[in-house]
Amino acid sequence: MVSVSMDAQEEKTVKTICVAGSLNVDLTISLPRFHQPGETITGTSFCTYTGGKGGNQAIAAARLGAQVMMTACVGRDSHGDMYLETLAREGVDTSCVRRAEEEATGVALIEVDASGENRIAIAPGANACVDRAWIDRCEEDMARCGCCLLQLEIPMDTVLHTAERMHRRGVTVILDPAPAVPLPDELCRYVDLLTPNETELALLTGMSAGTDDQVLEAARTLLARGVKAVAAKLGSRGCMYVDQERVIRAEGFRVDAVDTTAAGDSFNAGLAVGLAQGLPMAEALRLANAVGALSTTGFGAQGAMPAMAQAKELMRR
Ligand code: RIB
Image (cartoon, rainbow, N blue to C red):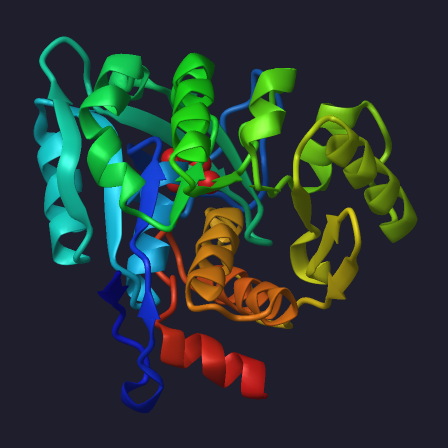
């Protein structure tokens, strides 16, 4: 058990959060609009940011004051150096971040349009080197955590193995099924909380997920496959939590979004930190919505991830 630095008078004791996942460097161009195949258009800016769904979740959780460890892999290149420096600066434990000799650090090519929406293409590089053997090397440290955050930017076999190991060790498993691909039934049985967005929910279930009723119906089919609970991310509309007994609908917060990259990652971090603090589910979902919303108010995946005080201020408004 470790302490997290929240508002001084509200400091509580929570378990460390472990993130096993991707570290990418995001090469991001802002564009007036998305272009058509074969068309070349001129962007308004280009920036290089640290990103990747795993790294984003780790840094968002650390900004909220949680103790965070990262299990991942970067290349022995300048992008890898850049990422390790960023993680260290953010206070994330990097003792389980491997450096691959044979692969470059993962890269994401990101386009952001004038409304803040994005398109992303990824070259996984060293993320593909996060394998069963590396998880086994890190297992004892990871098993000391209260919760393990997973996404799908490392090999599915590794995600399955990690979820199985953490489940057996009594660590809460939160899986963000992004980028969406069909999930093996076995994996579903190890997942305590699955956090798809509407598109991912539709892909995972083969059902529509455009309305609240459809989201509820689709989420229930995932419970039937063994997932213990679903927190469906509904963008600016907030989220819907569904387990065997409860349905909780938490409304989103209005903000001026400029870049929605990593809003979902920030949501997951907020949810994990809220639960690690022992908040009731409805409050943890509210915190997650606030963290996700605030993350969209600046450029880059990690540029506007809030501190706990900022999230609380938005929730008070
Ligand atoms: O979720 C956003 C992330 O997706 C980006 O940071 C990019 O690296 C891709 O992994």
